[in-house]
Image (cartoon, rainbow, N blue to C red):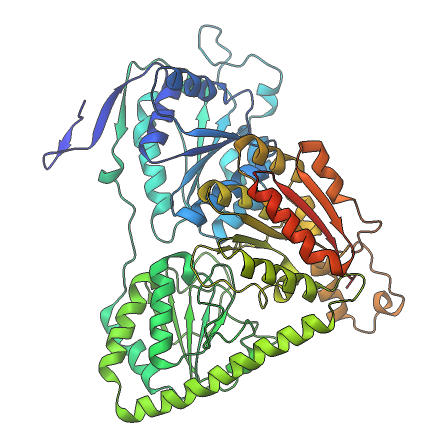
Length: 586
């Protein structure tokens, strides 16, 4: 049944429902939620009952992915959104479930992941006549003065469902805010009394009447100025991190870079630029910054480290980004002469159009000379990386470069693989060797909370049912990611992925800054790094048996590529895989 109209079109549909929890499920379905990532509690059962009831009645409902720990649930929803652009939903238990989401809320914020996080709320009442009122010990303990305050720093919007007849309206608002540029997580609490209130009918708001707001291509005059600066540049450089989140962004960057022979330096949170392209100049902006006269920053939160890499003070800096001033990062003072708020997927093509109109014969000659220099540099980079890996191919314990190289060989044999990356300090030994050339084939968290990779790989696999998903993960991140919960969910959901553990037996992200700050300190002098070494190393491969997946420990460098091939074969047969690769201790 159509609801009230605006300009002759229905704003909502009226659905026959029982309790408000059913309206919540109907609203999720209406807004395209295919997966509800659930960690249940004493307050979520009305939604669980509604899911079973509606499915039994033949109505479409989201598929429930039961996650034994909340970290996995939110990381999976994040991974699914990154792979599809479609927001999903997470449901957890009151304040304690919200707290167990932990650092994944940070990653969803910094990774701009549109996710509806819902949580129960301790019942208000003790009235026995009120359905859903307090009936167990914990209901007094789990009420907080401000449950929303746990996540308010990290979400775009938060709200408590106050009336049962609001459900459709509130869910529509949540998804509209979450998906609007720049996207991000939102938080909604669901009191039991409200969920268990009988409605009879519910207004389910139509998503097409509440679409997300898009930034668009940006100010045309600003884009013309960007084109003018790039055409006139003698030493330009492009720094990018997530431009490849859309095919349009990926292809737009390729077109612009090829037109003007722009060197592209990548921070690989996505596949932003073809890694085999001769204009791809690796992952270190340092060699370009001191001489750059025009620096084009695309979709990047931290383009360089000012204390380590010096930017030419005469350079003109351009930033094209959904959020070019980073107003949710309290102190962000990178100099930007021309900030352009835009979706690079729409802006880059226009910049290329404007640039093509401006090119003169003199410009083309200068660009062609630069192109030749960059192609030679690209060939040298690749040769140096390969030489380094092959020189360490027999080292025991296994060299990190050799593991990266072998993963690159595996990818060359099976280029339809999709990678999820949480290698942290090992990423510079992985990125040079695995060379994706298509968008949608590489995913990083864009945040700094470890433990994201396992859940994210689950979500990415749910979005790529027909492609193998490989997670490259540090040993510390593997533990943080709740491997038993993640692999149990992968088995149950029929979403297998392979985790390749970069097991260097230490928290290297902690060790590196300690050594840098105290190069002659007592820790270095006595080779005693408190709270860093993970020795004796746990047998991560043995976890596989607990949850019925394939596990293998690899210590011989000669067996590394065969072991990766064995793992990929198991993965193609539908079995999740844990490969514990024991690396040299940093």
